[in-house]
Structure formats: structure tokens, C-alpha cells
Image 1 (cartoon, rainbow, N blue to C red):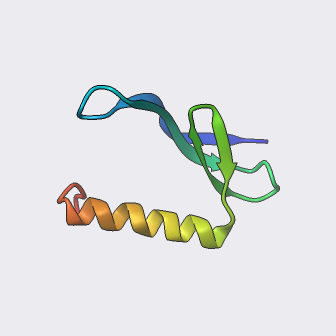
Image 2 (tube, rainbow, N blue to C red):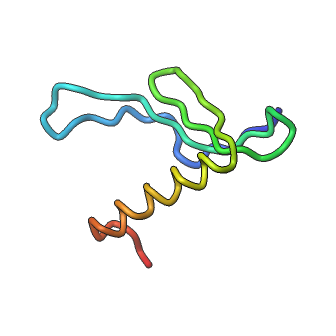
Length: 71
């Protein structure tokens, strides 16, 4: 199994300061082909292609909406 991390595990804190999550995102070949994985607080999910596309589109859309993307 090979993995490539694109967002290394970081503690992301809420603006309010109380809550936080540890988050990591990347790709893995654990199931034989390239898949997107998301890990939050040591729970990892490897997404099927349809779910990964929806997830990526949603993150890109909110980033664009908030003027956080560079395109």
C-alpha cells in the first residue's frame, strides 16, 4: 500500500477556540487503485470514486464561494 499525503495531519481549531479536529487528506492505493482518503481524529475513510468527486467538488465550491481558491 502506498499513500501520498497532501494535507498532513494538523490540529484545526475552531475560530471560537473550544473545539478542534486532527485532519489529514491524501491518496492511497490500499484497495489496488488510487483512492482519496480522509482522516479525522484517527478515523480514516477511503472513498469510492463517486463520493470522492462529490467531496472534491464541494470543497472547491465552498473555497471559491469564500474567495479562498486561486482560480
